[in-house]
Length: 126
Image (cartoon, rainbow, N blue to C red; front, side, top):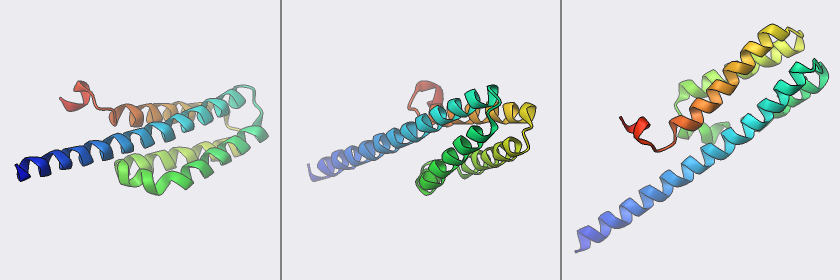
């Protein structure tokens, strides 16, 4: 009886931690997606100064959550996201719109994949 109780409590703790980490990832990636969409809108309008400010804001938000996300996600994903952000900021600084659009698409894809990869689904299990 005691072993069953310990197993139930362990599964409850594991389930709670899993749900909490999923919620955190979902929240952070959702916020980043919103900021990325705003940045893309500014890029389409060629408002370079506001775009640079939005990208800086996005980068600051990411940096404030980076350590927790590094624990929850694959380190390669974290590094790739940071590389994309740095290239995007560089392209915005030099007003290279074609390259910036390309990196923006990479950013959106990366955030979408991060969000979907951590969702519990049959697709992710098999």
